[in-house]
Image 1 (spheres, rainbow, N blue to C red):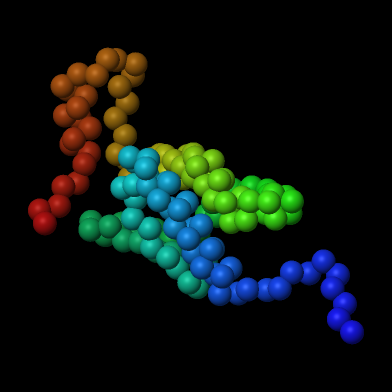
Image 2 (cartoon, one colour; image 1 turned 90 degrees about the vertical axis):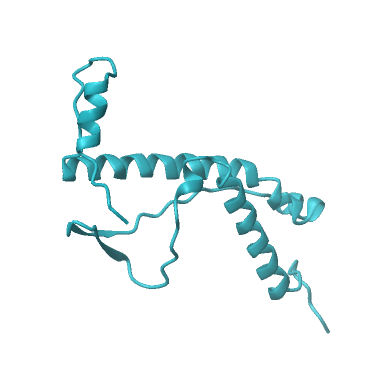
Length: 144
């Protein structure tokens, strides 16, 4: 005799397909942001640290930072709407993801400019050609 206690059949191929499509939809949504769309992402499958070296020989080691967002869907909504229950959240998840990525990006840019000394203090003066030239003097331009 079969006993069913509220467990639905498992469809791993379907779940993997939907998860892949859901992730792709979120990535597509985040790429709508002009700043985030310029960031190149590299997946890392092992380790929790990284090291980079600039063309002028500056090296730094760091740890990866987790960025995550949370959303909730009730069982009733999944039963009623199916996969659309998940996909209807894509825009909101994308917006939250953009906010988190942007905040981390500007935090890291601030850290790097502090470390490298690539800061020009305008001392509350309005933008001027002199300030622009001072900022450009701090930029390393590669002849590639």
